[in-house]
Image (tube, rainbow, N blue to C red; front, side, top):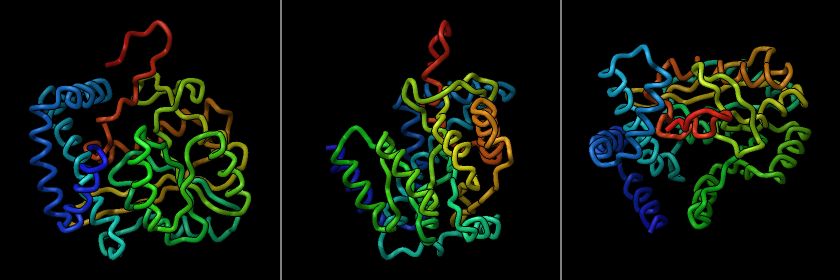
Length: 288
């Protein structure tokens, strides 16, 4: 049933303009706010804890806008993944691209941190136009959906690497071959695969893989994201500073601080529907 719904959404949204898809997403967002207690609770809890200075009304509005944005991500996929779509037609501006190109042309490999901001599938398609692009993905529990995801994403010809031990080895090989890899650094890791570091002053169990790769390889590191604009997307590439190459604690702390600064640019476009803080330090109350 999940696969049928997923494919149906892709087929229907393929025929819609981005403007129409986003309008439908806002309507579905209002329904979700009223009917989905779980989504509402997770989103609102995240925002209340991360933006305590906002009023109750402002927190609720931000939560509603975030749910809308999450649904927009889904409803934009049909058009974005359509093999006939030229993704550049939907990109209004790319900031920092010259620095990114220069780092790529140096031919030493490159790491790209891609937070859950805006629509990261847009970024995947843009990056796939460069040689030797790979991205790390976390496989969904439903193998049938994973198969479909891999097939649709495969239209970009990017190398898809599953997030497991074999995947880490593939990343190292890819970087040694002067390729570049995109990783979602704010993906909640499994127990034993992360460290606690502050994110909005909250001890947050954070992926250590990205920092370990940066420290070990010393390749250039960029943060990249595609923010939704009125009629398309604005893409940003931001070069990392030196703390990403320091010891693990310093590197992960810097990474979270950088992601927080990016989120603050358009907090409604961050995936607050995600249980980012579900793993808590010992003796702490459950976050949700």
